[in-house]
Image (cartoon, rainbow, N blue to C red; front, side, top):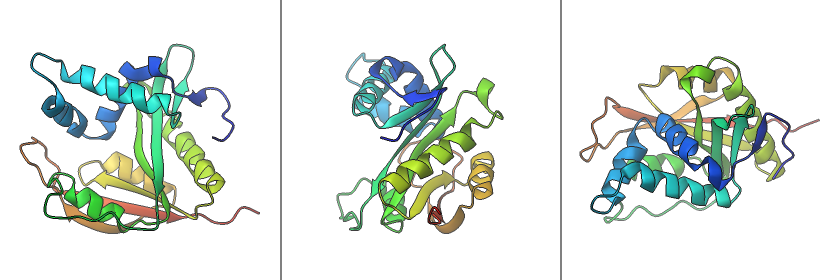
Length: 196
């Protein structure tokens, strides 16, 4: 992991509650829909989300902004390798369009979650976290960034486009019982210029 300067730090399992809320913001409500399906009888879907985020935090791959009162924004991403993931007939329909788009962004660092609490939006945290994402990508030897945004999230799209991301492809959103206004998922990519 690259060196981070305050207010940025690597997330810990104690950030799980905030991370679950942030990932649900970024995922347009899809995460809580999935957690509801994963919850056992009587289990709070948010507890599922908190457990999943605590596990991801323990892996040391989430960056958060913290001004001393806990995480208020977060960045999660991963490397998309050079081999596409097979999409067979048993592949979950809800995730099929997302995987099809990821398969078009091979050899990139994928921004999976970039979110902040509403009270902390408009303060440049998204831009700073994107800069951190690019540093992580370069540190991993990658020359490209990628992200998938919902067609309904104009604010996120504007942020990425200000940072040089451009649309590469789009796929219709499969809803599978998920109540959403999203019609399409849009893949944006950005080549990373070599650092001088």
